[in-house]
Amino acid sequence: MRTLRQIAALITFNIRTLRGRLGSASAAVFGIAGVVAVLVGVLSIGEGFRRVMVVEGSPDTALVLRSGADNEMSSVLGRNDVDIIRDAPGVARDREGKPLMSPELFVIVDLPKRSTQTPANVPLRGVQQGAFAIRPEVKIIEGRLFGWGRNEVIVGRGAHAEFGGTEVGSELRFGTNVWKVVGIFEANGSISESELWSDAAVLGPAYQRAASHSIVIAKLASAGTFQQFKDALTTNPSLSVQVQSETEYYESQSRTLRQLVTGLAFIVCSLMGLGAIFGALNTMYTAVAARAREIATLEALGFGGFAVMMSVIFEALLLALTGGILGAVLAYLAFDGYRAATMNWQTFSQVAFAFDVTPRLMMWAAIYALLIGLIGGFFPAIRAARMPVAMALRAR
Image 1 (cartoon, rainbow, N blue to C red):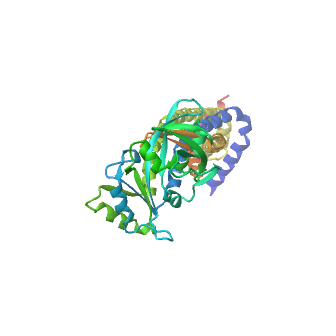
Image 2: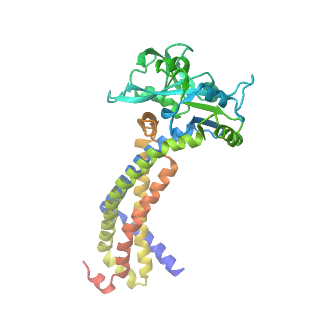
Image 3: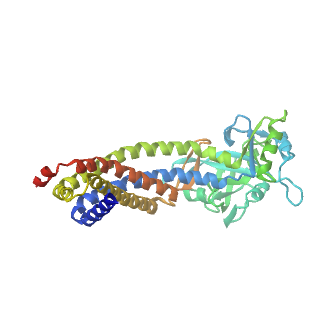
């Protein structure tokens, strides 16, 4: 109890005297804040991209692709494949008894980025009417739905924000046809908002793929019927397909970019963190040297070396936590919700997304700041605890 009281008294004393060391303390706080802000900003790219993918995923929705294909671009399913999938057990049905499924065609088209006017790969998806039953979150927010059998497209809200030529009423040339933009839609912030949609029956012939699709999306009676549905298709000798849940598929689609972003953040913030540690070391060594007489006097009055050491470490942690919170708040204000587009390395197409500074990300950033403070304060704390009283009292 005596040691705890000493630690508490010294911590209180250190906090009261921080005003006299405001310059060096501020340098440490802002240095750590800068590191944390960069860390959170970079990682929010991966979080935003992951969120776009995860929002799209549902455990009671299954995706069927050609066996060996790791994305829609490399998958081809024929009409016979679609007919077999339609009759598979476990598929949900509407009130009229029709299976809730959507055979879709996925192609890539070029559109200019609004910011740079450079061409970018943008997904164009050919759908049937079942697509809207499976994705009830898709809502037209401007214009109207494309007409079935017409060369018309609707544009996702994210694609409209990032790419030029996507205003309602504009015309685009894809494949052998000219397409008119007739509407803009939203889909709860999912990856669908990065796409253009049209009638698959019109899109297929324009790309010489009238008899094939890229993927079949099926709504299941429940998440528990997924294995039954998968086994029925993968064991059918007349099919060569792979089946994934929607959640699993889109999680795998975001993995490459998230790993890339995390690796980049680790390299950048390790280097910056090293600089912040040296800054914290310098701050705390300066504080210990400037207060050598005070520390010696306290030890002469009976304060133990352990109490002195813990008070110095606490001060370093307090400065680091202040910098961490400041950096996290700055990153939230600067990056959260910022819209951008990046490459989906699975399909080599652009995905529009918003940076996402999550509470979990901010919490880990604060922990990272505390780690910097602990390392930066540990060695100066040992020096303070081991400082000879007689030598410290003679210090000027």
